[in-house]
Length: 480
Image (cartoon, rainbow, N blue to C red; front, side, top):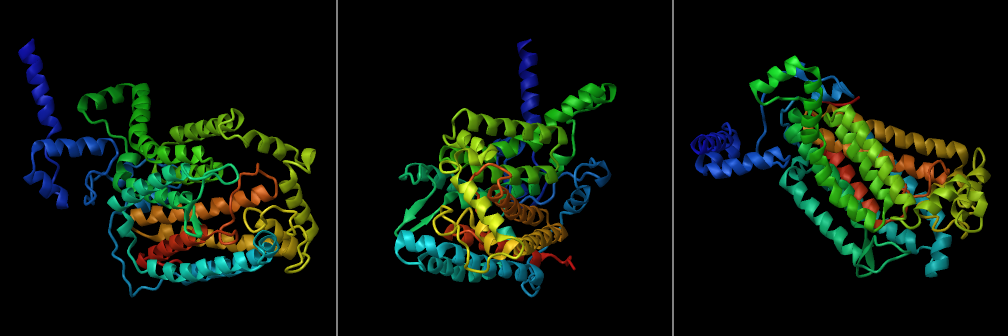
């Protein structure tokens, strides 16, 4: 018995240490390295970690075996693994560039109008925030154009995980910094401050897109691994269903969980609930389009909702329950916790159809706390009215549509999902900010892209737009 068991262990070890098929740099290192190194590569690959970032093509599986799930058109195009090199002679997408410039200019103008009263009250200089924001925009736009000439593939693989480690380190550091308004969100560098959470959003997009690019087939196609399992699945529909759930969890759920969970935990500890929600929505979008089974996707959404509920009502976020109560009835404590929401509603209602005129907002004179930031849209509605607010929303919608269209048109899988992630981030932030300002959801402190004041925010947004422009530049498939 001992000899038989020893022989079985030897056979299992030999099977697990079979060399990978020749494929680029990985095949050379495995061919010249030891069997132990090949064994480690295979184990890391099973865990969902891209042990070999140079590997371009995995097992060839016919397209007809792909299950029809959400947005199957994205699946069909994402199956194309051609690597399209960046052609610097190809122009970036002009409509997207124009939409971004319009949003930046309009956003800066409205932020300037909303901020000068607050800046004069706090800093004694009504131009203080305007000048700082202008400096960040002047730096950000050339940086955006420079980034648009760099291949997005530079951010793929090891680079994305280096940024992931840096983001986690910065989020840990910020917890030891002095709290501001009861939260730990900023790291000071001289007279400047920046939010690591803004970097974390982009990092999550890169890490998830890298995993989808290298493991798209594994996420979308269930493989049984042995003839015995295939025969058992053929006999039992129940086994096939539960085995499919197990395989989809290993390939389509767990890899996302261990990549995102450390960042989410650190954000909850800050606490920064709004950024946590944005990242959850981004990851959910990438998982859905990447091929995660609907059963797990729906389950994860339910679990995320339960987690948010418990975090809010069990006091993990101290102010969470009070904000929910004020959301249900802000006028119950109009001069206390409901002050911000009540004044925002007053500003929106007083704007009417065409608004009070640029610069004529009354609520920005210390009625709305920090009107240049989370509640800047309330001042926008008061000054330009319903018509102006709808036009701004339509510009955002046009940008989101253009970003998705350009992303889906790119034949490279990594670039496609990076573009979808960036566009989703801006779209979700816009929707949630407007929902907060209009009291459709509880106040969570979400900034409005391109409109809210913030140096880190505008710089990261413009950098991400630069990546999106590079994606449009690298695609041979143009969008009309």
